[in-house]
Length: 320
Image (cartoon, rainbow, N blue to C red; front, side):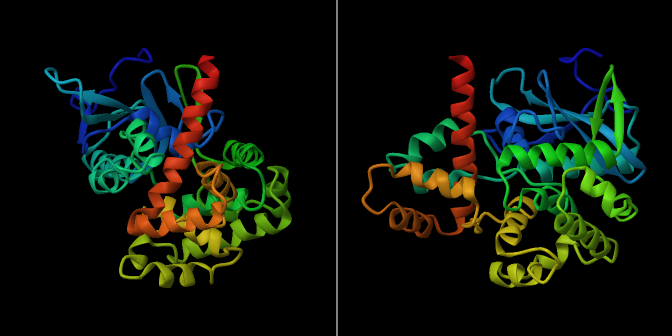
């Protein structure tokens, strides 16, 4: 199959997952990946490919945008496995997983109405209109992509994450290219402290991931357990986990559970992005706080707007 060919399901047709327009697959996946050289979730041509944990085991899924014949707008995304046909249970799980991770049904109309008159956020939101707020597959996978980022630069964290997933993650090959998934709790727990350190993790972070793996296997990282909790109650519960402070808990809620009411205030990249929004303001911190209060339950999407702003700037630099 070529990079641009549509992957097929067991019955010769791709799985179609409806989306709430507007939707931009590349922007949404780029926000999920954070940096272009991340080993997880690569974009290959017009496809997003990733190793997914399905009921029968790990499969390599390929996802691409699907537009109706008479309309240029994206009406759905196509999904199928590149490593073999998906049975009924796997197909249902794959559809649900893709819909979850890409947040395809999230309606951002209220957010756009809220920022329409803002001289800075209004135009930015319009440029990023198709970027949904992506989510990691589970809380365990979220923590695997949060712990390496604690108190280090984004590029250094991505390098460590790449080593972690390439050393311990499930690996599948297709058309001469290798793909990796997030290491399972079982694999992580079975890995020695020394092996984890060899991935670039500090002793404390290696220990944190091993202890979180224990909690995951004990069923303590089930997303459904947090559904009825308020943001603060959920943060309090998460910060009782080993090695998880308030910032990590907030990112887990935002990027793991999709709570757009949570803005990770301690995130250095987000803080820097906020300051850049008010370069001429006499009190940028106060202005940023006022903006967060005005956004209310949509404040978490500001994190993605700031990330998208950086992605757009990097894209422009490449074009120049």
